[in-house]
Length: 81
Image 1 (tube, helix red, strand yellow):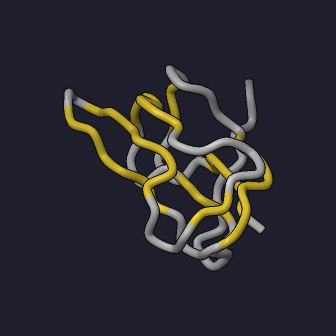
Image 2 (cartoon, rainbow, N blue to C red):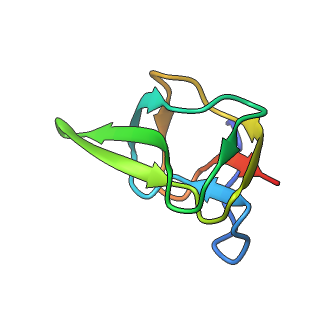
Image 3 (cartoon, rainbow, N blue to C red):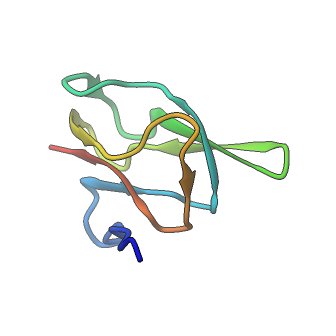
């Protein structure tokens, strides 16, 4: 059994998957500066793509998934500082 880290909804520096699906695109890399509301990851489910946005401005500290990975709803995808 693999334990999956879940994003803390109260912590704006943690970006979680809004829906379960497959990571279709990662639009940033570690070290990139992002603005609040900027699309950072796109998740595909049932042929529909959903943009996942940064909830705060900052610098991408860590990316925990890769394109093609299957993710659960709420799974921690990225950290911003």
